[in-house]
Length: 123
Image: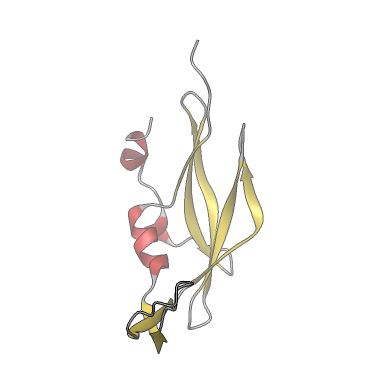
């Protein structure tokens, strides 16, 4: 007898790249470390970046057999919002879940859809 488990695959490769956004430079940071022994490192300067797309784990979740998975909302700097939703569920020793993206009006982002042939790689 085998065991059953949830397999949350999530977004396709195109969607991952899309919601990754860009890294935005916000400032330079000066770091100086002083250890309990009194030893000090030289001051180091480094750039600080933040993502342009903000991922918010909110209220919507996919509830599996053994665990829950959050469906993420992505906020873009231009005000657009895309939400992850369950595109397809398949069964193979437990549920396999594929997600895609919808805009704030509920329109599916076509590039975010999994193709059947891509999904078969997980069955």
